[in-house]
Length: 334
Image (cartoon, rainbow, N blue to C red):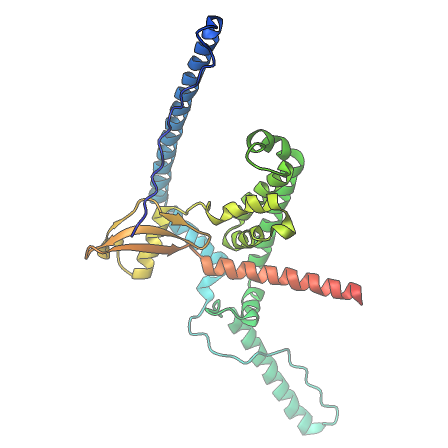
């Protein structure tokens, strides 16, 4: 059973005049308010139509640019280059975990010492071969901290770029909170419907937008924080709770490409219809309403592009931060 969400059309609410028969002198003011109300509603409808027109035009322009300039293909090629996916070997052999050889044999001399040196050189050569093969090790399908650490040790630039992105996002959020007058901005629109400290709610809104921009892992962190008003406060929790149902979807063209890559055939081979817009969007994917060529109604869930690499990278960075903070705290206690 599928539930369609129908967006309501704007309903004009007539203004109720307080003028009475015994007070004819207020009729002009009442009519003036009615004229202003009608003009405001008309202006709102015009603005909404203009926005829809611009969105449609911009969307068509983006689709044309993607097709003509092959932007998705270029983006994927650049992404593969940054992540060094061309070096990955799906048949990576299983190596025992090695460390740098440290031979030490003071009791040997003569021929025995020479033979031991040859074995040490062999150990060094094997270790260098092991390090070279690590570059071809793919990201593990099952999360393992040591294997993930090996993967990102060979890709420090990926971690550094992400750290720079995270730092920039939170620095920008801090500047917004400091300089843009978040409290004044939200006071007029939120004061009547949001109880408590409006400034705290505004801080939560900025934090929510930052989490959205940083992607799936941080959205999950924000969703978890929203369930703990005892830690972050009720107003911040209200703002972050919007992360549960206000996740923007990714483009449909990209979703169709992911479906075709997974199936190995064009979408039309399996589906006679797929909805133009997703019926739901979450941090890790989005859902389309569809119908198979056999006439069966189905829900097609599409995972966000490059999700596994992105999530594992962010978890690795969070682990580094947590363990770094724990180590620093233990040193202070000692």
